[in-house]
Length: 187
Length: 133
Image (cartoon, rainbow over all chains, first blue to last red):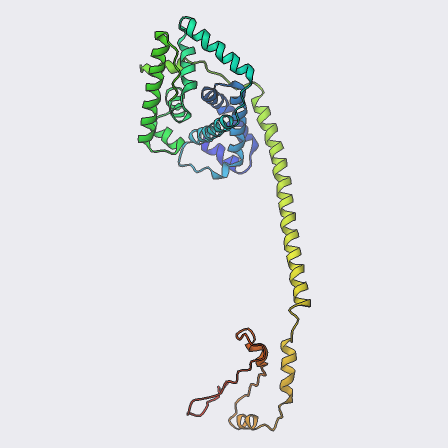
């Protein structure tokens, strides 16, 4: 059964069809949200919320875009809201400050981490969500720029600019890390 | 191969094995909450409409109590059958319709003075023509 048929059944309240959608998209959505948040537990929680919204908002779905784009749009909006909320209410303990100072010292003294993935992960985490979402959707999830524009409801030109800016930030940050310095700038 | 394929070297994760069960459990919980919320909303709406209706009835009984149309119509019975207007109408084979009006109540809403009575008179020179039914 194709996605359109499944969502049509979900619109009629069919939980079996909803279960099929969950099993088809769960890994992709959890992975996408993990790449976005960098926190597996949070990614799983947000994915659950994403699927619940898919069920309760199914009637709002219009088949002008693929179902996957719609699900990714819900996941992206949830992740953005969550990030704003956690930034707003972020509480930093004294222990965290001490640990952060120690980490800074260690970065400055140790040789640069040769692991590309680790550096890439750190660079991605430092990237502002405005650039991180299109970069992750393009380079990890394999969406086209047009599809990303549809997901994020932005013009294609804006998406192109954001991908380019995000990539150039990642490149600079990786080059700096490979050269052995600490990089504190945030895009 | 694009240089940005290095992004695919990042660690990927999968959903936990009990993910679907958790989603379905959450779904039934949310449905139950939604049903309860709808029931509460329905009863509160019904309650507010019912109380509004009660208030309207009470206002009508105790505050807006006035003379009913039938009470006003009773006054028309005082007009004698020998009245010239009725006799003239009978001669022209028309059905006279006489409707009594309490001008005080008719005009009350239009005029700030409660006791003002407006007498409307024919000012045209031509003879009045009655409506024939």
